[in-house]
Length: 364
Ligand SMILES: Nc1nc2c(ncn2[C@@H]2O[C@H](COP(=O)(O)OP(=O)(O)OP(=O)(O)O)[C@@H](O)[C@H]2O)c(=O)[nH]1
Image 1 (spheres, rainbow, N blue to C red):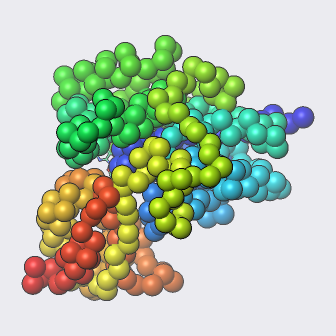
Image 2: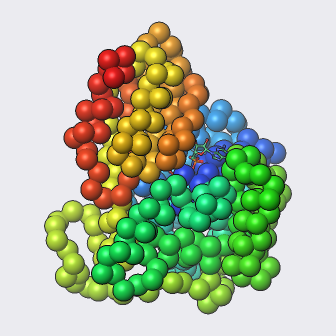
């Protein structure tokens, strides 16, 4: 029987730097053929687009598969397993598989899925890499603005000390074989060392905690951990308990939400896409986006903008009020328009945000 193909699961909260880390990995793959399975919160497929734009030949278009029917940990049977089987059935199997979970996914159900018949003999989990937003963690939370969300919830009649969001973060840490303290460029060495120490103490024995900026770690550090995590689930303590109801009484509407989502905080978040035509000025628009993010407490915003007179598309990436913009690729055959995915806690003022993002920035 041929050796199992190793698969690395990259997890971590919204905006921690998962896509950035994977992009660096692909650009430094040294000829190793890596296939990607990507799962995003929000239906725009920005991560896939960014990774496709990396232009590296080790990262081929057909090697990137996107799961978009909800959160990967809730759709394992419907979505992940069939996609994995499709990938494994190819004539030219990849050397390594990397799975990027959405920032709201619990890694445990995904890792456990590697025990399924049909999968378990052909692929194994090489390691779970959990990316942490270093500055946010040091500030006492795990993502920008979530401390505020949690504080608000604590004042509710909620008896749990822990909110679903911090539990989600704990589950992502508990499953880790390697923890990456990312965005180290935004921290001084004292803060960086303190964060590294805290995370080391909070993690299972033997888990390596490494520091990184822009996820820039050698492929040899990230891949080849050979942990077979799927056969070691007891050690990966879960805060969450999953009840598998056949009938979910919590169903308040007929949409795609289901009980798992209810249990691990997806319903605390919402996302939508805002589309508009060209913008006139990249810098002015970025500033405007930041003001909209601040005004509405948007947690994550990403997408592409068409800028007047520029053939390249402008990538916009915001985590809280911090924004990065860069021209990454020509529009090519893609429709020349501006598309942004907005992610925030449930209850965003969508009409106001849409209006603000589509009005002329010069007039704004
Ligand atoms: N300064 C700094 N910015 C970073 C670093 N890593 C990532 N970023 C930026 O943080 C933003 C989010 O990075 P992503 O890699 O898209 O984060 P992600 O975890 O894939 O985000 P989701 O898929 O939305 O959960 C982008 O603007 C990145 O350029 C870092 O080490 N330092």
